[in-house]
Amino acid sequence: MSVSQDCLWSRLSAGGPLARRFLRAAAAGVVLSNLERASILGQRHKELRGRSVLIATDEQLTAALALIELDGIAGQLVLCPPGQSIEELRATAKEAHADAWIVDRADPDDIPTDLGRVLWCNHELKARVAPLERPESTEWVLLTSGTTGAAKLVSHSLSSLADPVQRPQPPTRGTTWGTCYDIRRYGGLQILLRALLGGGSLVLSDPVESVREFLTRAAASKVTHLTGTPSHWRRILMSGFGQLITPEYVRLSGEIADQQILDNLRTTYPAANIVHAFASTEAGLAFEVTDGLEGFPQDAVGQAGSGVEILVEDGAMLIRSARTASRYLNHDALPLRRDDGFVNTHDLVQLRDGRYHFVGRHGGVINIGGLKCHPEEIESVINRHPRVRMSLVKARKSPLLGSVVVAEVVLSIDGASTPSEGAREAIRREIMESCRRALSAHKVPATIRIVPSLEVAPSGKLRRPNA
Image 1 (cartoon, rainbow, N blue to C red):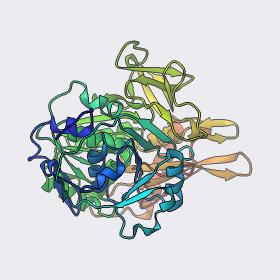
Image 2: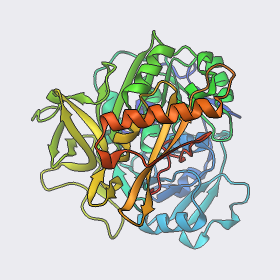
Image 3: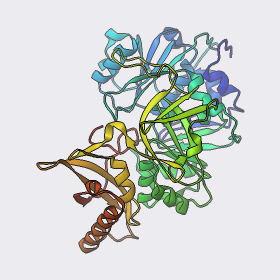
Image 4: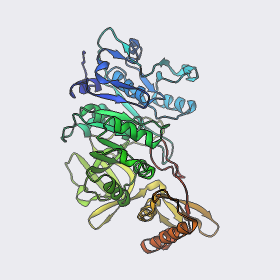
């Protein structure tokens, strides 16, 4: 296949024999060697050369195949996360000046044709009669999760996205990755690239399947490396089916990994390498922590000249590296980087005993009678209780203080039994006492409600009231 520009296909082809590697979803799969003479678009890729293409597919597998096929052909690839309405897709297309759409929905007629050419496809491969020429330097555009406001369109190159994968690391040929992330967001796209460029395979999750169904598929595909947010992992541990898999490598990112979840994973998977990482759509991957402790070492900050430079200013973490994005595409967005190249992540950290601990997002602070607190700090205390699997802290209006802190808690099930009301009340009292010992008075929840589950957003993060 003729390749005149560095692109995903050229790197993929250099990653080892394709015949033993695959991308697999719940209902379908593709062996990568089949992409050498076939594609999801057949000959229609010619219609997209140099265009700004919105990838707005329902299926992850179709989106992944479109990325492989169109990098080096399209001028710009805009990777839309799942679940967007037509109005949201239209707004994204306008911001990105998109003039073509890739869709796989059953009825593509509801896609606005006034915004460009619409090409329907699915994950079924069609024969191609000639190799693809790839002269374009393609811009990759991702959307932020929108947890602190409207989603932003963030511009990356393949080089900025693939930089963490190309750094020296243990060989991964023969590795099979599995991911709870959606590959149309930064965290999931990182895992897709790690699998493709590291010489491995990838098993994709499906939002409609249960935890048990996904883990059963992962086990059948002999997944060795499994990734997700802390909320994903809590759901796996809560399900009672975590023992269906025996991963060599467990990875968490996207939310604060507190000590409780790290310890629970170590107990469940004692032989696994457990890693938690910090990354954002704008700043890219900053670091990985492998010592089993929450937070990250103090000496990671302030190392000028390193591949990734980290600063802490006014409690916020800033990052500068080759992995950071170049710009926002939104017409009303502020500059993504400062003049010195640093990106403000708006994630707040505190230094305690030689280690930085995450305390929350700048936009997620709760104001209690003029005193501020971070929900994640309180959740970390609650989650230390041995019967707590996950928790959510939020504000409730109060006529006296303006707001008070309240908490919702999901309990782990001890065997097959559900705690009695008396046991639940005892757990509430124990949690409250722990909060009083560890937290300032204004941070102690006014109420603790035990709930059967907590809502997780499509990004894999807990859905918070300010999201």
